[in-house]
Image 1: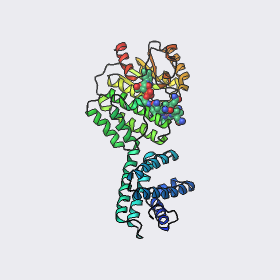
Image 2: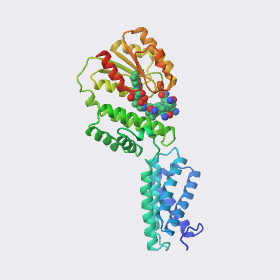
Image 3: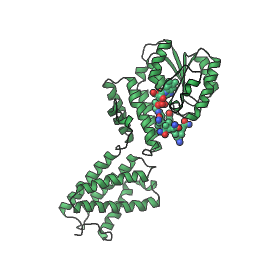
Length: 357
Ligand code: B12
């Protein structure tokens, strides 16, 4: 039976070339993204894809091509770490559509009507499984299980697929379902950010995806501001920032929002603030509490210096420290002259309310 791929058969060579060229025609960006070596590999992949499709058609067994589609997608994601999973899915799905169109319009009888129908169906299934595979990634148990795991997954899935609006809708829907601001901050947004870091660390998502997830999450936080700033005031103040050259500021921003939500006035100073500016800001705003956040352990010494300076100049101001850098220490905060440490912002607000309000 001549259906099985014969690499020298002129008809297959012609089809492979047409698919290859059409792909660049429809996606000119792709041509720029690939160097010559990758283009050659891509042409070989086209031939390989056709051969798997033909094998599946030969045995009337769609599973062969479905399994292959998942396999080739993960292989390409692993080989092209600089490209987003979503982008690679688009590329593969364009490829399957183009192959389907070319096979259906190929003038020289290659497949019977029945075979052509199977090939078309299998290509459609390949598109479906590839689209699903974008978010079929190994997630940590902490993320997958527990309270509101479904909302977390829906939010992260939308972001992995670059669907900003869907991500916002997931959060708005969660609000409508009655999830509190604290639950959304702690159980959804914080855990999604931490999982984002894990996925970056495992090389499953690109750096630009990590940045995108961060910026969407920051815009989601802004969506709570009407609610946050409309709470009855308590006339208490908190000043907060991330220290050293620390760029991680989402956690301390959430912390400030939570205080604001509980009626405190918050002075959130962002990240990478020098010691002198912190001391100046304390003088100006006269906070009841200052909160310093450290994510990268290498900024712990800077934090220690700042804590000492604040204690010396403003002994009455309560000092709290927190952030992921402390989690990997042997309770370092106990050796410092600070009033409070916790690994969540929520626990901190409860403590502050008891101490000060
Ligand atoms: C987003 C992100 C970034 C963004 C930050 C942007 C921004 N505007 O904030 C950018 C891209 C800039 C970045 C850069 C880097 N990052 Co980064 N990043 C992250 C990521 C994915 C999320 C951070 C986050 O928002 N977390 C969610 C918040 C809510 O959590 P949180 O800060 O812990 O806050 C909670 C609590 O800790 C607590 N809390 C926080 N502060 C305080 C303070 C007090 C007083 C209290 C009581 C409580 C408290 O309250 C919060 C809510 O409960 C993390 C992954 C992770 N594990 O978090 C990696 C991560 C922190 N980054 C990492 C790394 C390695 C880097 C870079 C070195 C990478 C690089 N090569 O460029 C640089 C370093 C930049 C620098 N100088 O700081 C590693 C750190 C590993 C380590 N332990 O050393 C992580 C863990 C990723 C990973 N899994 O490997 N990153």
